[in-house]
Image 1: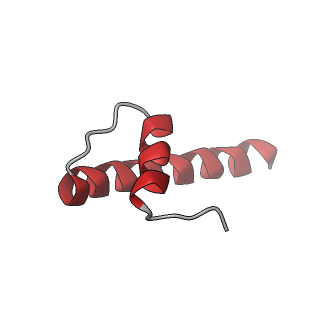
Image 2 (image 1 turned 120 degrees about the vertical axis):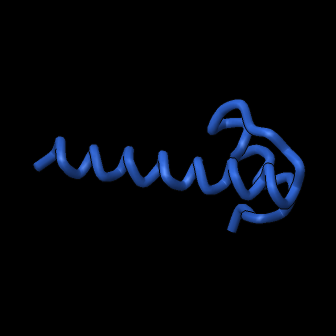
Length: 51
């Protein structure tokens, strides 16, 4: 059970990162090189706040 839930979680994170990467490229003109750089840019452009 643990392996399945971990796999689903990893898959969800991967899908979210790809969505953010595509959005930032199309709408903001920013090309992400890694999940970390994408998340930094998401906060910088104001798509997500810390609350």
